[in-house]
Image 1 (cartoon, rainbow, N blue to C red):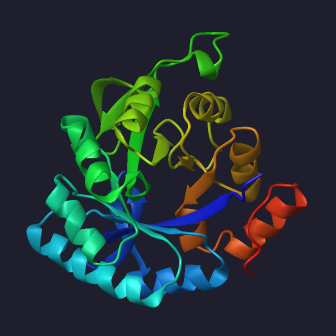
Image 2: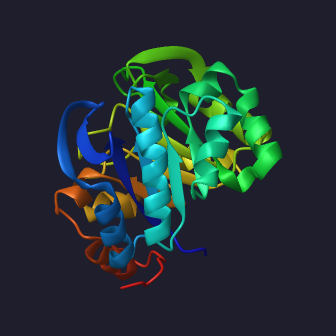
Length: 262
């Protein structure tokens, strides 16, 4: 079995790492470069940086930041946020990113996935999907729920459905799917493992689980029961609730293969 990956996620606004709920009530949690280097030293397998700046000036700051981050770490770096064209992707890949993550732009223009994959290869393209399921009826299992793909931090529903959109993204050239359940995001109550299990059964590319991690057991569950290939988390790392060495040690004790880099 391939090793499972642990991926800290850092939201960046105007060059600083921030944390909030759906990009609101943001708190500064540290220097983006220093924090990334810290996680790399701790044994993170990859890093994800998401640019949540609203202005063009903020986008330019982020590009320069990616150059600094890439110079200081030696693990794969995925960047996203505000990528709406192949030129945006090229700018960040040229700055040193190993992969780009696209979300809303792919929903507006699915051919963007094809274009980036055709120019750079599928291994460079991560399609992020935020989805929310309808309220469950009495006795209805979570895997039976209808999952609607959303934009704008999960607040705006689209006409896309989670599983069919993920399959289409793979067919268009996505190399990975990063799926966040908006019902679970920020709850620290765990992941919808049955949904991840269904998603991974439909796809031939890796699935990254995001949203809901409150402890090591939650991450272990989504990797083992949900068959996710990687787990992405933010707050539990930023606020010191769990360190990467602690997490990896618990995963190893549960028989979940991870790269021992500590």
